[in-house]
Amino acid sequence: MYLRHGPRQSDRFVKPELEEKMKTETTMNETARDNCRHLAADMEKHLVRRGHVPFYAATASEALGKILSLIPAGASVGIPGSATIREIGAVEALRERGHKVVQHWDPKATAAEKLEARFEEAQCDVFLASSNAITKDGVLVNVDGAGNRVAAMCWSRGDRIYVVGMNKVCPDVAGALARVRNLAAPINAQRLSRPGHNVAPDSICRAVLITEQAPTMPDGKKSYVVLVGEELGY
Image 1 (cartoon, rainbow, N blue to C red):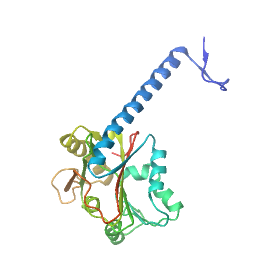
Image 2 (cartoon, rainbow, N blue to C red):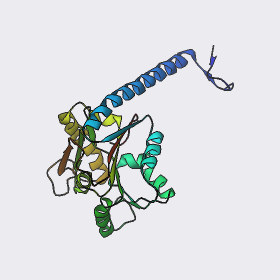
Image 3 (cartoon, rainbow, N blue to C red):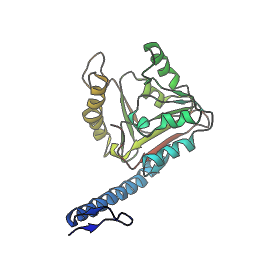
Image 4 (spheres, rainbow, N blue to C red):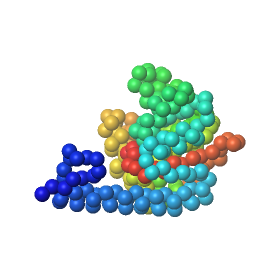
């Protein structure tokens, strides 16, 4: 015997045991989403205390909508190396709105153009990035190779927007550093065909930034942290 699964799907049938499994997985997914919301709500209080303006987005598409609402029309946007920002489609969406997007990840750029872009990213009206890890009490932890990304996180001209998947939440700074070095770095190193956290001339782990509070911002500028209830980035 087979059961019809869902309304208006008369041509689709599901075995009873499979339907039960799907119900269980749906419940688990809903539980995970609830856990993300509750954890994010607690983290937002810590982020405010640390000088950030936090938001929570349940999905990547919601996160993109929030980002677009935070960036004024005509603003230039600097985007460093970030899988998260590209996963949510921010580069394409910003360009469609007519923003100037500066990114050294452009595969068509020459070495000289990529170097210049690294400097220019921090001079844009908005610096849009992710974070390698974030603690439950709101500390951002990042490890960089060239140092341009962590430098801009400390000192950029405009607003800073961090988009961080809840998969990057760690219990404390020690756990965050371990996550970066043992999980994120090896994946990025493989992608770039470079050493991870080994001491080497072209290692991608050369500068560590632990942001305990949002650094002093230029007048009127803010540091936003958008927590996303999905797995994003490395």
